[in-house]
Length: 80
Image (cartoon, rainbow, N blue to C red; front, side, top):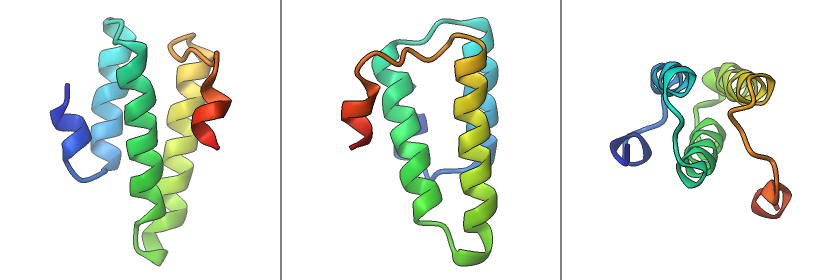
């Protein structure tokens, strides 16, 4: 799964990871690292694409939370 962390952020990679998470339980560490990777990728997007990217990352995180695929214990320490 590490290739997803080493490649450039894209909405398509988030879609793939989202589909994988729906079928297979991924390690919590990977999920948290992937979310950070997406947040950093959205932050570094060009101005005209940034809004869409941020919305897609937010949608991705919301979807993980809704389906119980994101463990939130201790995650606030990682955000700050």
